Image 1 (tube, rainbow, N blue to C red):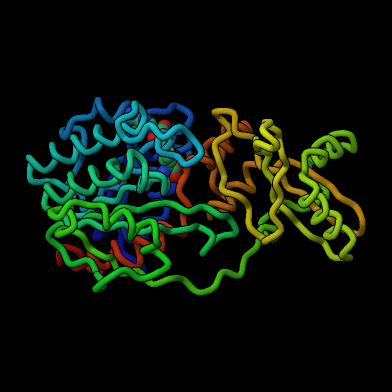
Image 2 (image 1 turned 90 degrees about the vertical axis):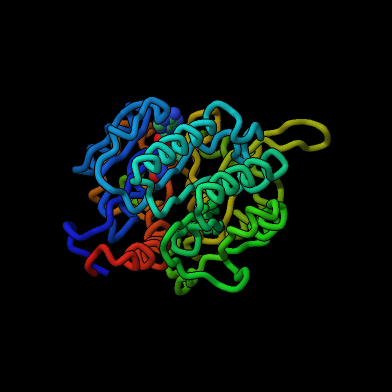
Length: 377
Ligand SMILES: C[S@@+](CC[C@H](N)C(=O)[O-])C[C@H]1O[C@@H](n2cnc3c(N)ncnc32)[C@H](O)[C@@H]1O
């Protein structure tokens, strides 16, 4: 789908990070972006020619937002609702930034420039944090502003070799986004259906089961996206032994079986703290299903992801690189990563996978936006 840029509907990208949402919003032109973090802002500018305002979303006024946006995208901070973290919910300081975004949408509304499409991206933990009240509050706010609202759980693993389930709340007003008569897998997952059932009647009356076709079967595996073995920064024998010593007997067995299989087998692995016999122990958990585990930001004590290759009786291990992480987010090779590995991994760990946004854009958002009749296709 190719849209000439002068006719493309305008999009705003909030909590923009490295701008991966904007890269996936095919057919839209990102006219304004915002992020508070200096490293993220540098990464955004290195990869986009548009305008990014660096600062707190709470500090923005409608006057600083240009044009007449058709869509506003908000990947609001997820740490407080992450399944991996403490479940403080949207009331917590970081996720509270969502309300800074929403206040701005209301200010645009007051000027008659409120976007007809709003998309919120977050971790799936938002469906249940605060006993489901956080999700209900977001949906209620949108319903009260006259939007039809619905949610899709989309796992990047349908497009890319990375397990990364994420929640996309899509709200539309005054235009005809394609809907279904009821929930359909995979995007209207059991978790989405359960959250919908907990909504109050008025919010449920504004609900839409957005229609989006599932993609063709993925034919891309973790091994396809890794750097060449030659020249990769493999651990020495002692470091490899120490890492593998953290594997549980079951995982070690699987690894040994892979090593003796005669084939090249690639695993992704994380160190995780598990409680065994009442004691906290560090474990190396490996997966051989051709997928990387969900990329996480290395800040906050999460360990980095490892690559383990078993081949010809030999086992080698190393860290996943930032460039490999970028490929796992669907970025092209010419995407400019920050200078340090750590910053690159932080950028990717926080980001949204580009092909997921593209699928949402091409399958639902852009057709709805073009249906406005204000734009040429
Ligand atoms: C989950 S990340 C989104 C990343 C982005 N979607 C991407 O693909 O790179 C959340 C972003 O919100 C930014 N952020 C957090 N609090 C903010 C605030 N109060 N105002 C503006 N940006 C904020 C963070 O710096 C971070 O980049």
